[in-house]
Amino acid sequence: MSNTQLSDNLIFQLPVVLHPLLSPLFNKISIDVLRIDAIHPIVSGNKWFKLKYYVEDCKQQEKNSIATFGGTYSNHIVATAFACKEAKIKSIGIIRGEANNFLSHTLQDAKNYGMELHFVNRNEFKEKETIKNKFDKNIYWVNEGGYGILGAKGAATILQTAPTENYTHILCAVGTGTMLAGIVKAAQSHQKIWGISVFKNNHSLEQEIKNILPDNKQHSFEMLHQYHFGGYAKHPLALINWMNELYQKENLPTDIIYTSKLLFAVKDLCCNNTFSSTDKLLIIHSGGLQGNLSLAPNTLSF
Image (cartoon, rainbow, N blue to C red; front, side, top):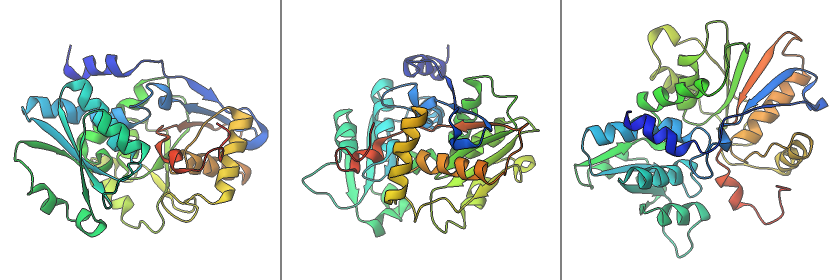
């Protein structure tokens, strides 16, 4: 059994289920949500899929630590900390923002899992190579969000967790584009892959996705940029109300950064007759509700 197979067995505490959306919200279009968010309380959603081949590669290269980058409420940071703890590898997090006496729930969790935290200001955070040069050469570096070919390789295995070959469309939220690239690589030729960007004016996103795709998959996806609700992590009242309505009618928890905007996009597309009655949609619930911890108590009904 490989390191990755062994680790998969440790991480997958619960089976992956397909959650049908049955309320009138979605205009009677056939939709299932792939609930990879429910596989594990910490390394939920797409996080483990994007990390697992990096962890394996780190061990094969006999590096002594994994270091990565993220923000105050980064799902990737806490998932990396936990995965490294399970793999018995030291973890280091380079955190965007100034250090202060108060740690977010996310960073406190990461610290509790043994991650060594280093804070850098926003300008310094952009200079990734400069940061790397300040650390030991025997550290294995993972890009923010797990971006890269190995991250996409892991994300491709998401479609192996359930029967997915009969869907006409697969939709997911997009941050770095790593998960989308993996889905594109693994999808059937007849399937249309659509990504919902959570960033405003991220005009380089398509090219960044193409950079980690083979030549024959360069044009096998479509990006939608109009559902960001003002930009990354922006969460106006309309989005909060949507999250509560969705949970009330579909028993589906979402987060303010990724999945709430994805599901709103799906609803909007369905209500605007983008899909036909013969289409069958698969929505990837990429998990990670860390961002919701920044909200005031009782803002959400779940």
